[in-house]
Length: 87
Picture (cartoon, rainbow, N blue to C red):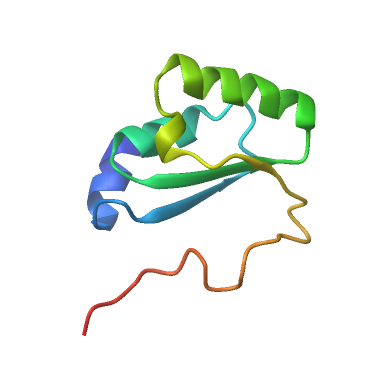
């Protein structure tokens, strides 16, 4: 079902995606394999170390920028993950 959703939203290759509350980042890895550039983030630094190991093991580190974030106070600009429309 998750892969079908990714296909249905039809975002271009290298679109940015945020996975907030990523845990060990299983969904981030799926998005990266689908061509997204992913920013997985979680508040727990200990879980992020497991996520980093997960990405290295799956050879996805080049498509991932992982960081510690507070969901109520994200450090990203407001439109950072907005689709870039060509016109």
